Image (tube, rainbow, N blue to C red):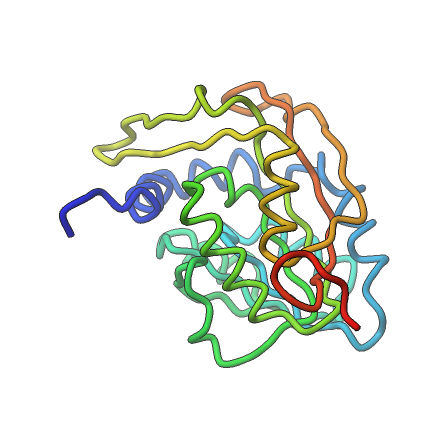
Length: 221
């Protein structure tokens, strides 16, 4: 293509530091209270969970520790991350895949987690991802989303092992608007300080939202 696919470039950058990322963040506990809240909203029949941009499987690992009955599919564009996730979380299934196009998965889901992947998608890719996710979730499904917040002027690219890692900052209100536009109704959100070992100090937005009946944020009839 005649332009840079920022999503693929960023995936290659993360893949080049997959083990270092795992060592730094896999055992992070900062977001466990919000994940517990997400889990508490699932009923006994909601057990098929999609972990988007799953990285080395750290969120999948925690979900299965707390709720071993879940059937978790993790998806990431970096093969190096998927290889690590398969080793560290044998109780889940992990596949290389693009979060912007989920129609090929061949199944629908009762819930999804999307931990910080939105921070590395342009507005156009974010809209494409969220709309594709909406189509793969069953009515009433729950979404846990975490993302960096900040002003769009902070967005940019950094060189990492010969690859360009693109980071996109958005105000919290803009993220909530994106979710509603894609057919999700937020039921809980809060801003929390980034972990002490984060490379950049930020305010992180945590959102728990429910899949609405159709794109545009309308509730099921």
